[in-house]
Length: 219
Image 1 (tube, rainbow, N blue to C red):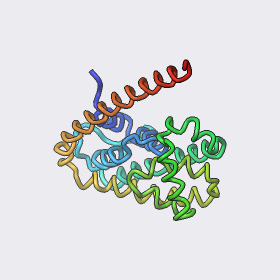
Image 2 (cartoon, helix red, strand yellow):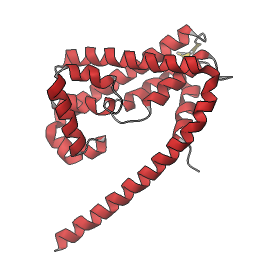
Image 3 (cartoon, helix red, strand yellow):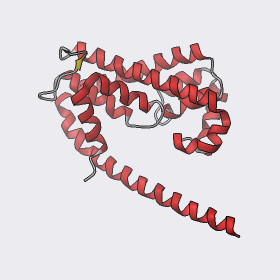
């Protein structure tokens, strides 16, 4: 039986707290991995609403409340920053050729990359900051910023600012939810089902496309 996506994220945060939030958000800067859920649940843990689970870091147990909230939100912000820098380097080194050949690996098919290019053309360097706080845009800003050679220092500053606003806001929302989290969590099972169906559909499309290409080569 496959573990639910939301359950896996919760377990990681409950067991490893600061490190888990840092790693999950670092990955989310490159691929959509449920950053919203990660920071929401980090806030719930910080509030002390999960019995038996307290945030720990470097062998020390953080005090429930403001201390845990600040540390977990900061861990998410810094993790996202590190992942964003990795993405920027990937885009810088790979260039457009990487997107054309392997863009789908990074959830950057041609149509999405074209939207990203239009986004940067419209907003310039400020597109980095806006992208970090805009749903659905966040995860494809990192690599495209590298492809478009966004200046590194402004890129880092704007990314950190945007990620801090985003992470602290979602962690704050999780803290406010507190015990109400359990009811919200039940609704995530429908998201899990939808993701599973999407994965099956995408896999089937890739198989069909591969067969068509092989047939075309034979002709």
